[in-house]
Image 1: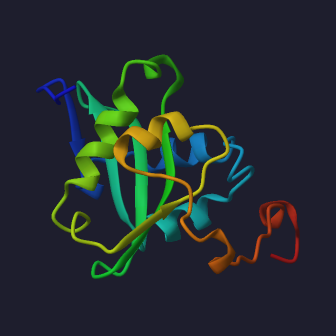
Image 2: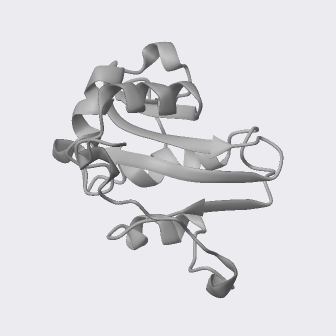
Length: 146
C-alpha cells in the first residue's frame, strides 16, 4: 500500500496531536494510566511519527534511538476504525525506510499481540533471547511513589 495525498506518514512533531496520543496510550495494555507529563517527555525525547488521514492523526509510533546503531520501536497504534486496512504495515514500512532508521544495526520492539503486523516488515523473534535482560515495572503508572 502506498501513501496518498489523503493518507501520509509524517515525522513533523508539529503535525501530531499529543493530547490524542495521550488519550490512546493511557488505555493501551502497555501504558495503562500513563500520565500526560510522561507522554510529553517521551514524545520530546523520541523520533516520533504519525499517520495522517485527510489531516487527522489516525496512527502513531516512536523510536527511542541513538540514531547511529540502535532503536527501540514503541507506542505504535492505529485508531480502531482504521485497523485491518494495512495502515500499520504502511506506517512501519515507511518509518523503517527513513534515512535516520534504515542504517541502524539493531531495532527492537515488544508486542503481546501484533506479531503478524511486524513480521512482514522484517521483525522476527530474538536470535539470542538469553542475551537480553530487563527491569520490568508494569504497574509503575499506578503507584504513588513513581
